[in-house]
Image 1 (tube, rainbow, N blue to C red):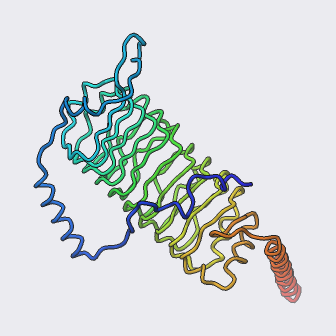
Image 2 (image 1 turned 60 degrees about the horizontal axis):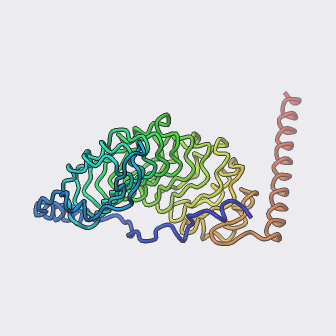
Length: 344
């Protein structure tokens, strides 16, 4: 069994509990923005209080010096909180969930240097910037209004979710400061390119539902095993590199690849075993499955179906026939050139 069979994410799981992403008409978008602005103006100020914190603390643990105890988990969800300044005093917190509030500023969390996990999904954040948190391992800022990836430099972070924001360019993610990061989610943003993701230790990259047309800079992702590019605008498969020697699974469902022979550009990926290309124009080609197998002879699964031995044998025969024809054509061309030289 290949490694990709056991992976957590596949084409059926991607998109679960996520809205459909589509292009809105300009007028509708402007109207929506105006409505959002009006709704924001109506949001009353609701500062987080010590009483509310006390009601939602849990998980009593020893403090760092082992001489005292403190509650280290705080879950405050769906409370319409707008201000968390008071949290800067709770320095022993390790696990915080602030999902579905009305936060625009999370800078008070910079004081919580023992923080291990942070969830700020579904707020009004324009930035995920925080001072370096030395022990933070998992952070999620999905469904906000974040426009930049700058200011995220936590040395032990392993998983970062910035999906469904307004990011159009990846910048500031420094590999020297994010050496532990193995999973990066940037689905549902406004990216047009994969440039800027220079994280050589990254293993899982989720870029679905953007506006990506170019694959750039991927050659630096030497440890990448899973790449999701579903629902973008990619029409060619330039940009893959033999340096991506651990890549096993690629999901490119719902893109714009029209020529099935573009998949031959993936033959440089030595461990590629599963490819999702359904809902691309090329998937309507009568020879779709066979041409993919001819181009990527190591592949084991296309879309949801494994290749069988009969298909493999047929693909091998076609490949060898084409190769022989190419060699013969090349030899014929050399003979013509030599003959022309003799005549001269």
